[in-house]
Image (tube, rainbow, N blue to C red; front, side, top):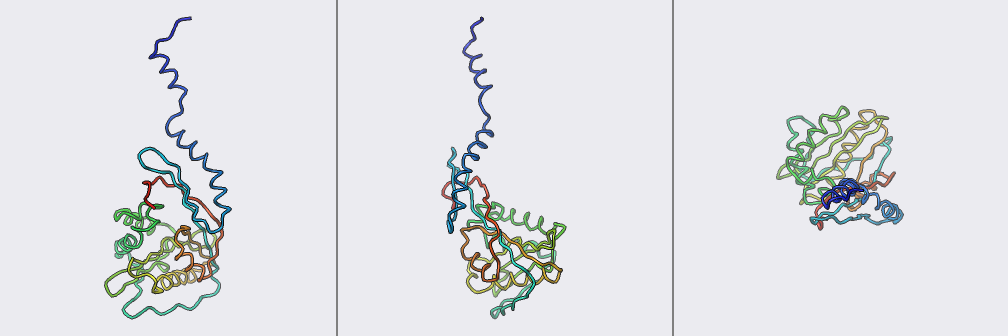
Length: 236
């Protein structure tokens, strides 16, 4: 048998090593048991973290899929003086994107969905929503306040007679005034007028204020899911 050189031995060893992507996948799979345990903890926000080099972590954010029937139309509260609702118009796409950024860029949702933390990302997101085949202009609204646009909601028709809320956002400084309820109820009315029977949305478990709002409006939790995100450590 011919002896191998050190360089040949190193090359042979490298051929048996898993690539970095495979190691990343194995690390993610190793977290499955932890995810299962977190699902069984009621009220837990369920953010699990796997550290990586470079101060980044693979984190799993708990999200709730919620649904509501659309058989009965609840009364819509009046907006405070100085506020008005603006129906969808393609010329207002950038205004919706600007309000998305103002609503989400400093929240946990901008970590879960990085496009919400970037102005160009919000513009791209709104463009993609408006181009969906099921996009419903009648379930998409802007909220205008005394100092300009401050709220947005978008709705999309999904198969099976279901309306999906894409994003409901109220800019910082305008919250806790009942404005989100008004926007959401108008979007749900848009679903009803389109003949839809059920509404769906998703919410990050950390967003307790939004969850309380949805429950007040008869949304109930249907499913718990986890979204994996590679994020800067300490970003949440």
